[in-house]
Image (tube, rainbow, N blue to C red; front, side):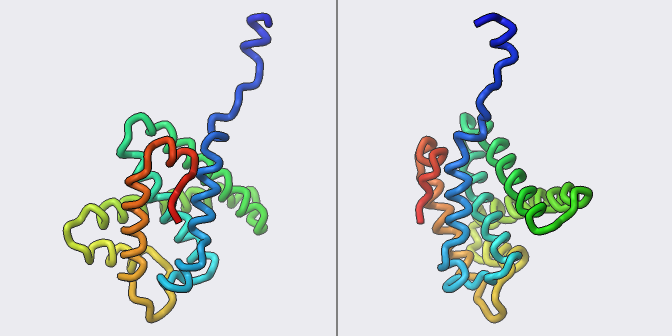
Length: 172
């Protein structure tokens, strides 16, 4: 193979190795218990809240491990790619897709910050307050239910080995 052909040969997309993890994040966010037991509204905003929440928990786990740092950017790119596609499928025009994706990135950043703060706090109610502010819940739902379930998932994701995490072996 000549130098030029090696230089111009297509390279594999590094995001592809994280696609199973992305699919598992989405599947986990769609599990019925979030909506039936923990009180997340079974609506488009509620489902988006859960995708962003599970992604945020995974990104918080990734940021604890220096070797995984490049995976955070690649996983976020998969999120953007998927949301871009979903927006276009739902009829959002090309001129508005970027604006919507920017808003979703802002939501993700805010959710990561709120969850980082709530999970790190010695005050158990801190995460409950973050849930109250950041999730679309069914009226009358106790946000502490969702906070407890998110804390449990956070601990389960936190205990995963790096390889298991990257391969999408997230707990149910």
